[in-house]
Image (cartoon, rainbow, N blue to C red; front, top):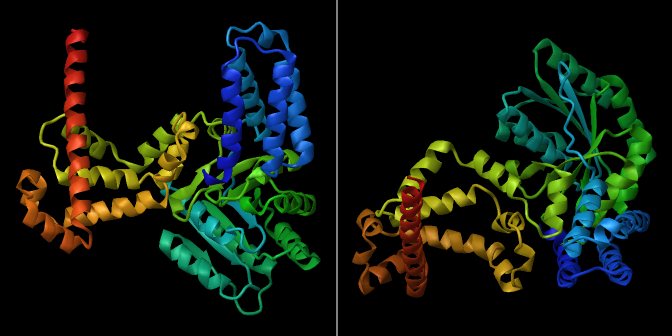
Length: 444
């Protein structure tokens, strides 16, 4: 993810230097730790957090188990990975949804993505089979209620809006009573925010908390605002006793150190992270997986889970059969591309692949916005073909290619490039088929 790109690159440089060493000395370790320290500070990680982190890694790395290890460089990397996962929270934590109804009070500053995140949570819990009610408790921001109403309609959940003259605690109490009477599973209270924390906001939120006694008080933080997010989290936690954090905009290009600092400073678990605009771009936060991704070691588990959630088993089996047959068509090629698009932005998928941080920058850049545009262009070209042309690309002579380019708003060279990639894909499927036959023979 873009937020940790620079930090990940710095870690990779340190690790490359260590992997080439047959044995680690105390000087090697101190030099590596100095580089790690600089990388964390440059990423805007809180100074106290960095100091504690380096001290814990140093204590482990200077032990006899490292100095006598067969692969001391790898052992050092493991210590950094373990401590980074611990810094991020250790175990995965989830919302408390045991209540009848479960109650979630969302708090945060203006611009943090609180209302959008509220709708994403509603969509997620509705998909899991729960009924959800959104309570519009932001009565000060212009159009806040209407925004929540639109989002509630988009994800297909209920919404309770303020009556004239109602206070925020009264809205909350009415929403809770409505949910109890109608056996709603989850109520999410979308509260007001400010550009800065002030006494009026804190008093309003405290009164609402008293009225509804929520099991979850969740602070939504913009991960890109740097050290300010740490002080915001500290203040909210002191005044309201937050139970968890959601970090948004992890797909941004800020330094990202605040995301590593906030859990350590507040002691509150990071529950979820936002990686984009779509409802499905809100993900459960797994500290160990995030640590692995930051260190450039990928996250295959999350990639597989994402694929399972986005692609149904029937479609996957059908595509497997196509890949193992000799009749792969351009329509199949387009279907494959659409399945990949369901998994989200390609740059996010790349971060889940082990070794991605070691790829040349121009290769990594090709998985950014340009890749999305390229996929749209490919789809337009294939859709400009006749069904027969999609089945038999050999029919595509020069005049047909000119017609397809004109119909898709592209150039003939774009059509030629697509057909070249398609032939490469067909050659690859043939090789896979041959390899599969060999494995089957060996199995017998």
